[in-house]
Length: 198
Image (tube, rainbow, N blue to C red; front, side):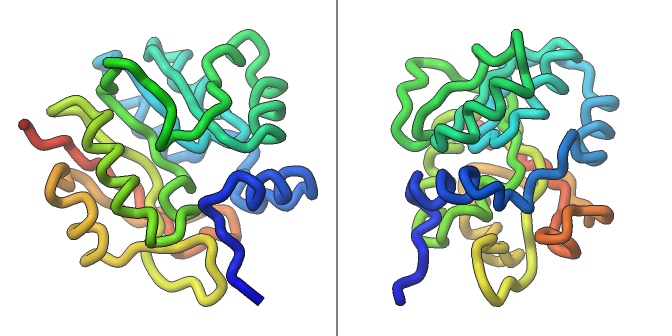
């Protein structure tokens, strides 16, 4: 039996339809709450693979111009229920193919998106982030490190992260996270990667 391809929409649509969403923590991760309390500059924010979209409201409430994108239709429908009037900020589309026009983002928020992709797509992720994050901007969020015997999720190692993001980003903050959802327990690190100039 071939390994399921988590880079395809159908993989995630089936899970949403079946209610198999163990990565959904039902709210805002404490690490994000802490981060939002210590940054004051408002910026344009993008949330790829936003799932239920809880974080859209969190960024919006502190003044950021936030957009999110998700390619699973059931996830988008759920996010729109969760977000109500903010639902127009959720784009139903493919992060890798969507035309963001000339928009660049001061901050891209990561949680569960990179680790949902098979490693064969990681170079595409890094290239897209390099294109979308403004120089001096940041890619921040919860990145998974360690080993997962039955992926997804697909965790990073320090060396793969450095190889993947190092050419365009500089790691400026990293800390281990406790209190993750069970599927991510012991794997999550809050990290902030700053986009290099040029």
